[in-house]
Length: 345
Image 1: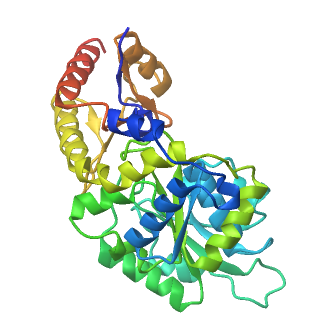
Image 2 (image 1 turned 135 degrees about the vertical axis):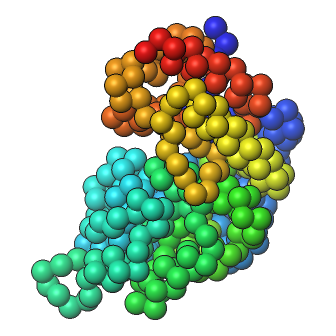
């Protein structure tokens, strides 16, 4: 069976142009810094974000982890949203690998409040608490419905943190979805941060990899931690070549995903589903199935039996993500399947 796959934008396949670039990529040993394609990708990413340097890593999770390790000493504290990917979906690596203490913030609206940042901050000198040194922010915010942060609001939070002496790391796995939504520049976010992680394998369509951008000294520390975590790769220009195309070209097609997600949400609502409202929709639609065909896992299985793959995102909650691999025809077909399921409640 050929499936309509709306589970995530991570399921995208590399384009033919990417495959050709991968096949012909000039390569070298990246651990020695000798891979020219990786170096080109890193230089491009640094320039694009206005940062001094960048590092190619295996995944967004690794990018966030090496950033935590580079900013924080063991036993220090990190302010982190309890709905963020770094808190919920990275296997607790902040604690058991980085050895840092996460302090929880309410980020259900996409960004924490200034008041919560102030209240959760632990100053140096208190022997009872882990001194807070870092704030992490996610943009776009996955669990908040793919919500993009407004640049002004983002600047206020990041500026407050930096004024308090904190470093700011941005989990920007989908930051170009925020840029596409507002039509602004990625530097509107990165100029207020000390580091940013950008995923190449989601909406940008590359088969793997992320880039972490920051100061040169930060990147050199991150390079060491990447090696310690087993992320030092050799002739990895074959993958970086696709990443270059992702960053240079695929950012421009993200508005198509947003348009398709809006159509999906509208169709689901018309079919009677409880679609989660969002003030700014990017490439995701979340909806509830509580009391409808059982729990989310059972509902996802019923969808799969009809050729539609969706994500079970918690108790009674389904996520669907639009991406390079689904067009408007796929959205219409998905809505038809869900309408049929709705009729069988």
